[in-house]
Image (cartoon, rainbow, N blue to C red):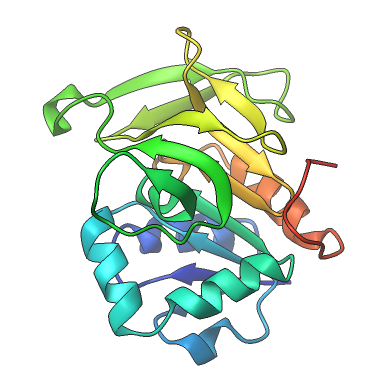
Length: 199
C-alpha cells in the first residue's frame, strides 16, 4: 500500500511521520503525476485559503476530484475537511465539492480559542480519542449518505465518512494515537467504489 500526503502547505510532515510509524510507504504530493499509483490521499490541516490557491496553481484540484470519484480513499483533516466539503459558509476558499457536507470555517474562534476534547469515535472503540482542535471547522450539514463518526457533546459533527471519503475537524497527526490513521489505511485497502454510504 502507498499513501500520498498533499504537501503543498500545512502539517503534512506530521502525517508522514505517523504513516512511517505504521510501516506504510508514503509519498509527498505536490504535482498531479505524484497522485499516480497511490491507494489513498491525506489532505492535511493548514490555512485553507492558501491550500485552495496552491491546489489550483499546481493543477491538483481536478485530479483529486477524479481520485475521489474513482473510489480511492481521501481523508481531509481540519483545512482538508474544508476542502472536501460540498459547500462552506464563506465565499473563500472554493472547496472540491466531493463530500456531501456543509462546513463552517474557524467555527470555534481564533487560535487562542483552540481546545482539546476526548471523543468517542465509531470504529475506534472502546477508548476515547484525544482530539486537538486548532482554528477548527465544524460540520453544519450532513448528507443522507454521510455517517457521523464523532460529535462534540453539543452534537456538532467533527468526524464524518462517506464511502471512501473521510474528514475530521481536528488534528490526529498531533497526537501519539495512530488509530485514526489505521482506520484510514483500512479504508484505503477496501475495494474502490464511488462515494456512498459507509459499508
